[in-house]
Length: 123
Image (tube, rainbow, N blue to C red; front, side, top):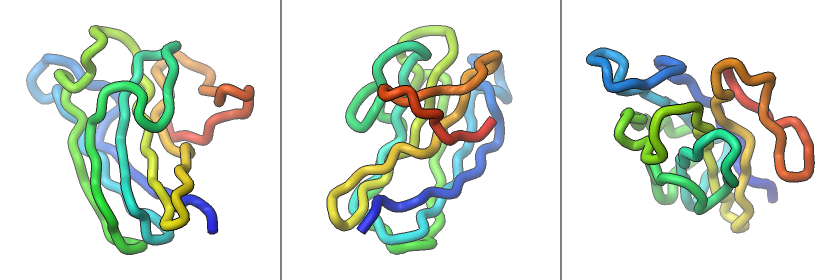
């Protein structure tokens, strides 16, 4: 069994301390049940992955197709101003984690995994 695939949408691409721009809402669902979910934020150029960076949101066991929503606030980005990689991770019932969703920092040509493969993400 593979890790769940995630489908997501978000309300904005930037967060700041300015009123009206201090929050981005993320809505997602998985194509199969998952045991755990994490959203993590890491500053561009820093190591990323499950358990790395600031924990933005987490959920426990959830059935396939159930929609979840969470907010990313400016004060969740604890490493200061700059570009961040916001990643969504879901753990399948077999224990495997995915790493297939994230936001590309503005001005970036894309992200690559540690082994150099293109990281699938939304702009």
